[in-house]
Image (cartoon, rainbow, N blue to C red):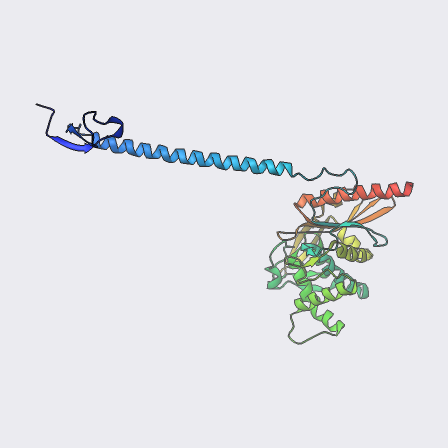
Length: 357
């Protein structure tokens, strides 16, 4: 009979046992399949496997979501207490300190004794040392510095004075303090390093003047009682470290110099440099301290690196009251200015309240 071939044994599906047969073997006719049936069966099997895999992924995702929801629920239950309405403002800085600008007395702070990277606030010390030399001998500011290749290739912020170019010390100090030139810091250290070592009695043969200048920075810090401070270079694009209260000590001392105070309160400076072929070119620098745009603020120095975060040492006046504020490790460049202004406002209110009482 067509359509029927010889009978073959096959495994019986348990759900469809032959009622007349007690075993697991049944006789079934061999049926001819259409030509493309094998391909279709393989596709169906692949589709089924894909659906199973997708189902496993969905189930796994649901399980992860349930665990995350449970963890979130636990975190919600572990909230910190509500913010207090008393005390200083909440700031992004890792550490801060406030001092009376006239006496240098530390008034308030948070983590003020913790050594942290200080970035370009390093340059307060670099500039102060040169201004101290100029106080003893004003002609120091007229000396000419020749930019070295090392200074020119120093990374980070720059005064944009090229190798071989010549510039007066008085102008290069603006390049140090306004655009925060790391190249200017290295050039000044190279220029004055040997002289400082000789004056301190620590001169040695074949010692790098940059290292000699940095050693003088650490000597001056020790003299001021800056026990949480250490300098590795004159610019701060490194791991130079200090505490907020140490920087208050330095700022209070440096701002007693009228020349230093004038420099850090300058918003823009323009000067000429002489190129290595004798030509003159004009260069201009703008101060990175945005607080100078607001009445009452007159310094002092910004700083910012990846390790230090954003830093600011500043001085502000409200009426007859003058304060110094240091913030270290603010979370953004603009954040350091906001942190500082909020600390000033709070401190001035506190001071005014105490005077009235």
